[in-house]
Image 1 (cartoon, one colour):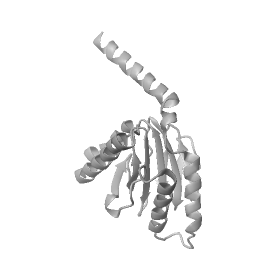
Image 2 (cartoon, helix red, strand yellow):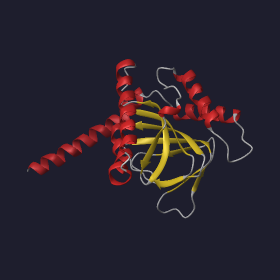
Image 3 (cartoon, helix red, strand yellow):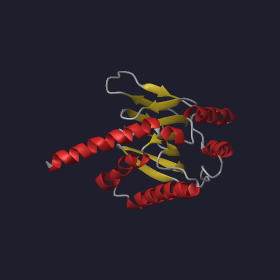
Image 4 (cartoon, helix red, strand yellow):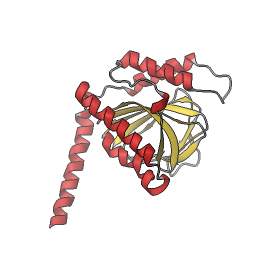
Length: 223
């Protein structure tokens, strides 16, 4: 009987979280995927590259400043080289800079200088991945040709779905996730214990995420 009660509680909790995700949380989102795509394309148009191998950093800084101008400095963290951290998840390795993190949303710059490939994970959130530089390939398990995303395109991964993906060297994107962000954290942390043993990166990731989430609750009343 005890296990039946635990199972019933888990099912009820999942139902309530899903209902909140559909009806309550969207009213409290700060960011809009369509607006972000427009801002990204505006910035991309100012950084026209004649070669595939170039430094994307000026574009990333420019994008951060455009986001802060549109949404407000209180919602967008400053750009700092020291705040970039590695991210190992689903067998893929990249690097990320947290621009915003709260319970219901995160906005990060994500990319790779050398290229990567892995599993997207299955998340309790919608993920919007707008390519800034380089290219991303993705596929469902029944695909025989890849989906191809190039600068200015947004790849939407609906909650509960999973894909294989890859990014070529020098590829960077603006990633927005909207939903139950704490439920995504184990996917981002477990590779540390199962593979990399990079506890310093784990420590920095936890501190930066917690600092942003708590700060947004206290200072911005942002859930």
